[in-house]
Length: 167
Image (cartoon, rainbow, N blue to C red):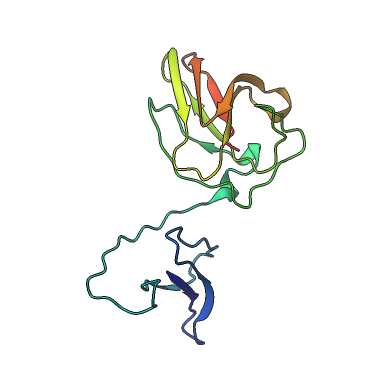
């Protein structure tokens, strides 16, 4: 896959290429235009029998990098989102969890719709993500509820808002 930026007023600008099925990551500003092409990696030639699927996923960490700008997942019984911690930072006062110093954390909040046990897990990560679930309304007064790698199970109380921090 090859990616170019194109503003229609000048020739396209090469941004990135990747031929190992990992995709390309790029930052887009509202209104920017991009050109994407798929090439056969072995010889960079077109093959009429090639089949593939395009997938574009917003990896907008800016909304969830800081505790105060965390993404609110509401009070759904289940939820799913796709994100990345690429480019994320740690902020002063972030708690340590699962034995790790914070460095590239992203934040979500969720309000339990019912009392019960819940599973929070990650899939498809290319590293071992540390997860932590906290109760509390500000970074300085968070109370740890559960922590682990890849997945955590925790008991939730209805109408309580929990903060999740995948790292």
